[in-house]
Image (cartoon, rainbow, N blue to C red; front, side, top):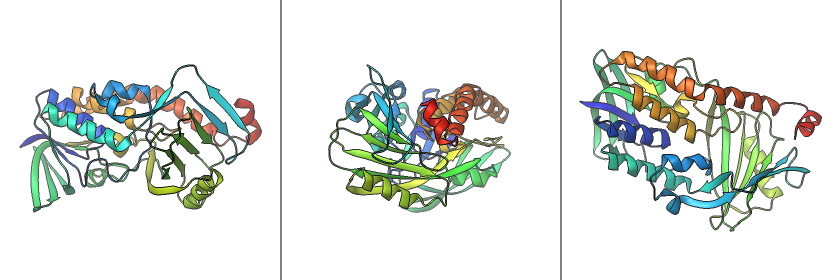
Length: 331
């Protein structure tokens, strides 16, 4: 029997697997496809990301330094309010490469990471969990003391454990223009209902365009308007859900959620890479696979770590819905 089965090898799952393995636990990770694919997350990250990656990661993943942003209350070409600093405030990175680098670090720590293995069921027992898995060689069952659901905003583990959904699921779209762009600022458009759109230069890798809004807000059409306004030639695109607002509980008898599955995201950007890895560190520190009562320590610990940031983020998000004159005055 494993100590932990981890479902999902995104940043949160791989970070937890690495830290739990560092503590001597037997950890196996199941990822439904190839690690990092399909891409469904922005590659614009804060500089803190390098504190969570192996030492050689920046050389492999870095694409561009970002020094500031231009905020718009309309579409491309609308009046802008710039914010700029003398030093980089964030980076554009290879987002698929990040997942792979973090999974490699988990393997190096002793965790077993198995790609192309889809978890189809989770059953809790008094003394552990049974995990149904479909792999290249057929269906099988894995047993563990506990299961970590790190399988994204539409988490199967969350459903199997009977835990509540996030407060909100936004519809996000990403698209990429391969024309190199070395500008050092992002464009943020606040004219999207309940959220925003963005343009991120990624150096030689091109430009990332994105938009998120509530389902039913004609997200694909709005995204097309955004990219056509910039004259972009989108060569590939992807979409996915962005969870906002964690439920009251992210733990069960023998299971727990981390990352997007737990809606551990920034309310004003939807970003969850650092929040998820922060929560993963708390989980690895607090959870004893032989003691289900330790799940309460994780429940308290991650909320204490993120509470202030999430409350401030909720206030910023509220500002997206203020009347335009007030927004303009604020900027």
